Image: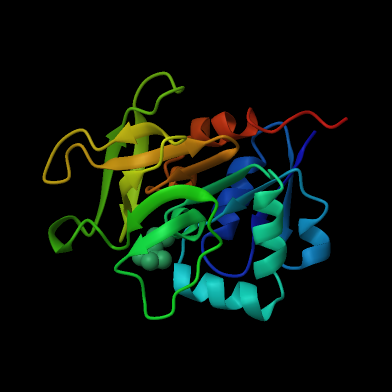
Length: 198
Ligand code: GLN
């Protein structure tokens, strides 16, 4: 069983751990570099991306996380986690840092006031049938690099067509919160990207 960590500095860590507990894996809350080093994959939860990045720096995790991503660690980033994975951020806070690795440009808090937070369903490539999608002051993806696969777009409404799930090799990111929809299929999709332990 692969060990899948959840970065546990801030955000909805418990919801991810609970979702992972339903899969064939060994979930672990990660607060230190030594814990990160034992993980076969990692989830960056939703929350507040600037706070999470600052805490990662304080806890000495920023560089280990960047190194692990560069080394091919499979990572699922949801909402704030998507922002942390992004190489480029629009409407970033002053001085906001990311981990990077995912060749996309995201816009923070992109949906605007009218659809600030909402529940919807989206079609996700690789998942059969509609997936519940909870958006909370969510980013969307404005540009993707050549190696990035678009997995989901908003289906209707003012944000129709906006990209809300992407994959680049072992990196998967969603604007929405798959850990809050009571559905574990996005986590399963991620779990299937994690190579078996040798
Ligand atoms: N707006 C938050 C940020 O910029 C993300 C919101 C979320 O993760 N639900 O980090």
